[in-house]
Every structure is written in C-alpha cells, then in structure tokens.
Length: 355
Image 1 (cartoon, rainbow, N blue to C red):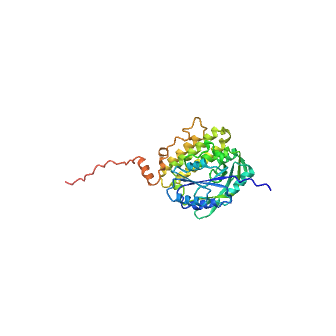
Image 2: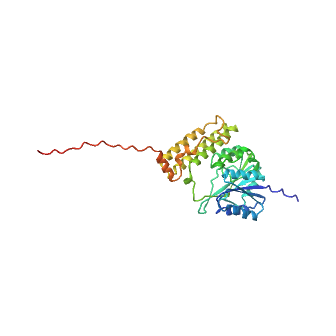
Image 3: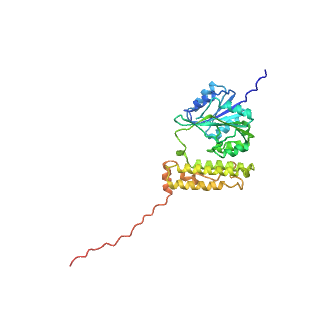
C-alpha cells in the first residue's frame, strides 16, 4: 500500500496585544485543530498585561508554539515579524481576540490541494457581545478565481473582504518586499489586495470557519484623524500598486467604485462623532471628499516616500477630529469671537418743570 504524502506544514501567526481576557480562548481553538502539522508563532507586541505569562504557559504545554517578544510596533509589524520567521508551506493569521472552528486549517488546506490554489478564502461569523453569530454575506458565487479577478473583487468589500485572518496563503506570496504590512491602521486593506492579485489561483469556501468577535467598545467613538489619514494612505498604496503593475486600464473602474465606498464609510464615520461640533465634522468631511477626488487620478509622479504615504498630517489636515472633550475646547479656540453689537445710548429725556 502506497504511503500518503506528508501533510504540508502550516504556520499560524498570532499577534498579541492587550487581550489577556480573550487569548486563552483563541489558543485553545488553535490547539484544538483537527490538522496537526502546525507551527504556531505567537508575537507579543509589547503587551503590558498578562499576555506574556499566558503565552509562556501554553508554550510549555505544546512544543509547536514559538514565542516572539518585541516592543510595541503595531499589528502590521507583528504580522511581518511572524512572517519573517515562518517556515510553513502555508500561512494563516489569527487575531488573538478571535477564535476558529476545529476544521479551520484542515478544510482550507484540503481545498488548496484540490484546486492548486495559492490562496484559500473562507467565510466567517460576526460574533456579537451577546454571543449571537451572524454569517458574513459573502457575495462571491465562484469557487475559484484568478489572482487578477480576486484582486479586483477585493475592491468590492462584500465580494472578497480584505481581512487577513479568513485566508490561507502560500507563504512565498509574502516574500516580495511589496507584500509586507505597513505600520498603519487598515494595514490589511493595503496588503491583501496586492497579495491576492499576485496569486495564480484563489479558491473560496462559503463555510464560516472563523469567528470575528465584536467588542462592546466600538470603533465609532475611537474614530479620529489617524483613522482617516491611514485609510487614505492604504488607498494610495493600492493606487500605486495598480499603476506600477500596469493594471490601471483594467482596474480603473472597480478602483473608482472602491473609492466611492471608502468616501461613504469615512464621511459616515466622521458624522457619527456626535461628541464633536457639527462645524468640525463638516470641515473634516469636506477634506475627505477633496482627498478622494485627488486619489481618483492615476499617479503622475513618484509617490511621496517609499511607503506611498500621502502628504496628510492628521494634526493639521483632520485636526477637527480631536478626541474627547479637548475637541470642544480646541474647536472653540479656533472659532472667531462672536461680534456683539452695542447700540449707542439714547439721549436722556429731561422732564420739563412747570414755572
């Protein structure tokens, strides 16, 4: 009887930062995978809580776990660090406050083997704080796509979401320097579209295998100037990728549709900041519209800086999105003093006295 081929090694990269209440659940779901040939890389990104002790305790229980400790550099840098030491044929990335189904790895590896795909995408659940699970409405009907098709559909947020964690990747897709995660918010938006486009084949399963847990502290109250700047930065990275890869004539239409969705998202998020004066929200929204209009055009010159960053200073450009009570204080200080009209005094009437 012929022996079955060895199961490929899969590297599991888990960035860890301030998640001590959720990390055990995440790690238990990884150790409970039906697929055993795993290399589990936990990257402690300078977490100030008890995550380091939890990681050490789990590593003592399972030899497949590798620990990395670094100063706080952000989610993108933590993923890059894990990728730099990964040795698996495939890579998956799991956020440390989420968890995965027992067959998360095995199903995607099996689909990759059957279709010769470089990337496999699975569906996922939104898990509400109440525990209710809502499946994501994945709009891609096709089971396999070319990399070019997948990259274009990633610009339509419902067709292929650009999250890093609901995908299995051939590790060599990340060896290109242009496929690293930038140190910004929305780092996956900037990176995953490029990775998908560089794949030869992408496979999709509509089975929800990943559990994306929503916390009670939402993003709306924490939406500030950096969120706006970094989202526009991520868009500009995609813009330059399309241009550099000579895809502008093919991708221009889906890219501009993507810009409209980004504009809507940013403006709605800004207007949801009801803790800020309306005047400031309108000023920031108008600036977003101007920057989106600027990003519609093809790059006419070399990008500003090696990371394709825009000339956007959050303190200057989006200073109207100052968080908390300081917003009202800073906004008030920028307003012109209100003019008060003082009427001239009327001449006093003197009573005439009878003589």
